[in-house]
Length: 398
Image 1: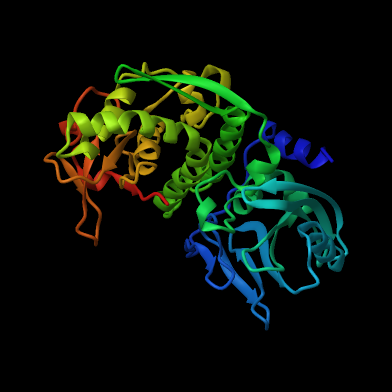
Image 2: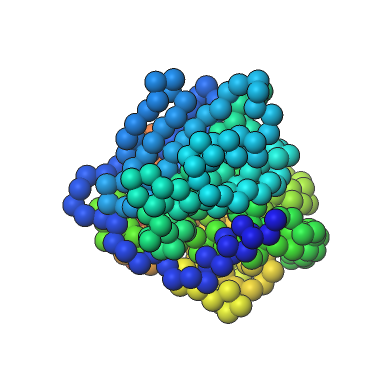
């Protein structure tokens, strides 16, 4: 069935979320997680838990200023043997009209997705997904929906909720369930990277540029809703987390090939501190990029997705900083991004005892070298006009 895929992709051509969801009401941000069934959701800011079933297997969340609601439902019974059957039964219990399709996602051979509509106290419409959990014969189903007359403007917000689902921590930083359904693997796209005089032969998937852009547009539509809200910082942090989660997995082979070819060379150059040598090699590489926008993927996001960066289609300070984080963290080196609304800029960080300008993570005592990606300088060297630590927002990556 291709109708669900077509509907998801068409959302990108629709207008962004147009209604204002915020008022002065107090709202909060929180990751939803369950240590018994080992799933989690990194939901947009502001949702509140409205109701929990007596068996604590169903959770209903509402937003005080947003028409979108969502339900988490756990099915744990030997009689459940497929995601599609679980989702079909659940939606039939709601007397919902539906279309169900199945697909593979990460280590789950069969997940299910549905475009559905139902009538409760009013008419609702939305998306639902279902995936196996690590516990045998256990499944998680998510239902995110809005009043039918507001569905079109809520689609990207709904999909952002569902796409944040994680059912296996080993795949936390891999493409989400919605992105994986909309953009299944198409085959290798070979690329060459020239880093420090060494040509690294590697590849991404043929769909990765379009898929990464899909996630970028979806999360940016959510971010715009928080532009004037007091949780705008948290919204920025979530935006970059969601983009990073998607990017890290798409660049898994790239990271492996870069590390395999460069790190041994760095160990020979600087046996005392090879981590610093490797980090500087990566930083110097991105500093050498010619700044340009990705005209083929023109959008309002002001961010070039990482597969597009690797293919030479554009780059900016945000994407450069995130790319450094991906290649450092894949090598086991602690790194995170810094973003600043006042400076309209982004930087990267790296934990290392080498001297230089550092950013201290509040409450931890840990200090990270600051890395400028747009000027040809070493780690720990930043411009005086960017030195006010209070104007930088840390984006701690998963």
